[in-house]
Image (tube, rainbow, N blue to C red; front, side, top):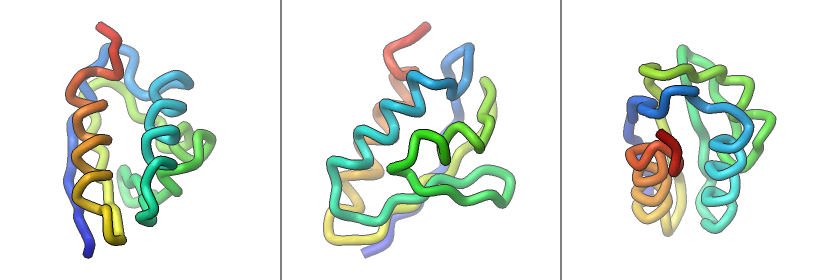
Amino acid sequence: MVKVRTFKIKNKLGIHARPAAKLASVSSQYKSKISLARDGQNVNGKSVLGILTLACPYGSKITIKAEGADADEAVEALGKLIEEKFGED
């Protein structure tokens, strides 16, 4: 199963070290292969450094792709994290 969704970054500081670590941590809880993409650049969703290289500021769009048995759950969990601004303002 493959699930792909695009989300808008809503927290003021964008994806910096703390949100990147949260994304990687949540991604690592799933068996699915997870990738994040922005402006044609794809990275491993389970890699903090990979996520940071996307350089996602406030208002940018990020696409999450999950491939595997738990793809739906993975994308939903990551989307919820983004929608809740990673617990930031």
